[in-house]
Each structure stands twice: as structure tokens, then as C-alpha cells.
Amino acid sequence: MARIKLPRYLKWRDGRPRWEPGPALRAAGWKGRSLKDADGHWLSLEAAIAAAEEINRQVDEWRKSGASPLRSRRRRQPLPHERTLQALWDLYETSERYRRLAESTRRDYRNRARIFLRWAGDQPVLALDEPLLDAFYANLRRSRGDAQAAGVMAVLRLLLSHAVRLRWIERNPARAMRISRPRPRPEARIWTRDEVAAIIATADDLGEHGVADAFLIALHTGQRAGDVRRIEAFHEVNGRIRLRLRQSKTGAMVDIPASRDLADRLRAIQQRHQQAGRTPAALVIDDHTGRPFTRHTLSHRFARVRDEACRRHPDLAETMRHKTLSAARHTCVTWLAEAGCEIPQIAAITGHSIASVTQIIEHYLARTSTLADAAIAALERRLGSH
Image (tube, rainbow, N blue to C red):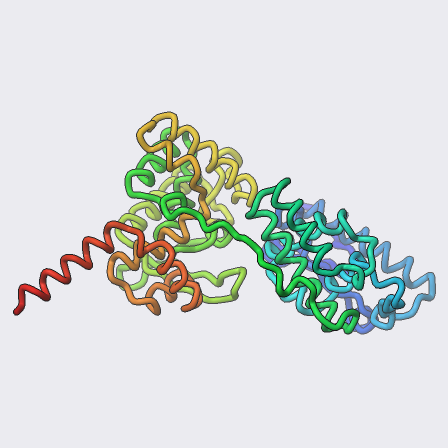
């Protein structure tokens, strides 16, 4: 077999290609990068070679031009008359605060920013006063609804706080605004046992085993869908199956023992992979491609399964049709609290902060009949003791 010669700076480690420049290039500002496609998958050897050759071409052009080191090319600060909302956003995107955010959060901010930049991107930040922001927010509520309007204004408020830090403005005109964020009905966010059974059965019947796998893992661990997609394997410790992962958004490390139902499902997943002769890069895979789900593919497949489950179970359709895969995270918190778990115990499983768990419990758990039944039972035991 002919030996393949890799381009300069291309490193290949266990199927993971990376363009890694030498010390001189790094000192000049060129940074190493992992070579992945738009969905976050590692490039094939052929594609990685092409990508590395293109980066090397850019390096060669930079050298020929005699340009100064990249790190010395500082962005020119806009003059006072150039301090537009678009210029402010451009600076914020290069800030350390923005770079520290998870990629999913940055993507969400960019999508929301496009809305207010279309509205006033060319306007000076100094011109954005309270009456102008109030009118923009009112129009957003009419055209896009309370939830999306609140999200857009939250990012705009954050951006204007950055303008205060840069001393473009003295105070944030959006800080005192009253933003209406509709509180979802508890029954529209918490999955019931009957609904869960309907989703799992429908998904498996349709051959969408990966959708059912992701849903059950999220329900029994309280993890975000993105982290569920990233789980590579499970481990068995002292006869107990466990899932370990570092959450992508918070960086929190969680080590979760699997419930009996989840352990049975995890073994079934492993058996399915073995029977198909697969060694996938992730535990949960798309049955159509044999590869890990992308973010959009999983959400779209789940929606189709849910809609079919509503058709098959009309008695559950009224509430089930509004629920999403992401609601599994709050459902897990609620189920754990109903089971009598303390707040620190719940946080250790789901990776939420103590404050977040408290907020979820206050909003959802106080409205569940299970808690009310348990409270009355406790009261009766107490009264019966006298």
C-alpha cells in the first residue's frame, strides 16, 4: 500500500485531523485548528488534505506579501461618528466575553442580533434611547410574539451593556425596560408517563430507535439534547451502568448512575450496534445514516415522531403536541423532586446550578398533583401521631 504524504502542518491522530503550525507561525498569530465539517464531524483523509493545502496556500500568500504578524493587526477603534450598532456588534464578537460562550449560545445570539441589526445596524448607538427601544419592542411583540421579542431584547440589552463598558454611552437605555416573557403552562412543559410511553413506542415502531434512545436518556439524566448526542459510551462500575460526560455549555462534569429502565435501554443500544456491526462515534445514532445526529436532524425527527404519536393517541394529543425534546430536562428535575430528592442531589445529576433547580421546582413542581398528594399524606401522618 502506497504511503500517503501529508501536507505541511497536517497532523493525523486516530482519525482526527488537525492543522498545527510550527512555533514561528504561532508566534506570528496563526492558530491551530481542528479540521471538521459544518456538522462537527472530523473530515475524511482526502477532505482534510484539501483543507490543509488551502490553509497552507493562505500562509504562503501571507508570507509573500510581507505582511506584519497577525497579532499586530489590531482592529481600529471606531471614531465617535462611526460608533454604530453594527460596529458595536462587530467588536462584541471579538471580545473575550463572547468567545467564552458555548457555540450554541453564540449561534443563538447571532440569530437574534440579525433582527435588531436589520432594524438599526447603521444607527449610532447614542441615538438608541428609551422611546425608540420601546417602539421597536412593541413592534417585535406584534410581529414575532412575546417569547421571541423577549429573546431579541435580551441580546440587545447585553450588547448595550458592552457599549457602556467601552464608554460609548454612559448608561444602558434598555436596562430599565419592562420585558414580558410569557411563563409556559406547566402541563405544556412536563412530560407525563403516558406521553413518554407513547413517544417511545411510536419511535421504535417507526424504526426511529435513535430518537427514542435520545429521549429516554434525556428524561433519565436531565441532560441537554446536545450533550446526549455527544455521549460516546456507557461504563459499568461495580455492576452499575453509569454515564459520564462534561457538559458543553457549563463545563460541569457529571457522573450519572443509570436507572433500571435506562440501563435496559443502554444495553439494547449496545446490542443493536453489535448486531449491525457498527462502532459509531456516539452512543445515540441516526438510524437512517448510522452516524451521530446533528442538532437539527434530531429535533426534526423527534417532531415527526411526536406528531405521529399524537395521531395514534388522540387522548394525549392536546397537551403532547406542544412538547419538545428539550422539555425532557425540566421533566427530569420534576420527577427527581417528586421522588423526594434534595436540590443538591438533583443538581449533581442534571448539572444545573442550585439556583436553576430551585427555580424549576418552584415553577413546575408546586403545580403537580403528585406533590400535593404527598403533602397531604405527610400531613395526615403528622396529625395521626397525636
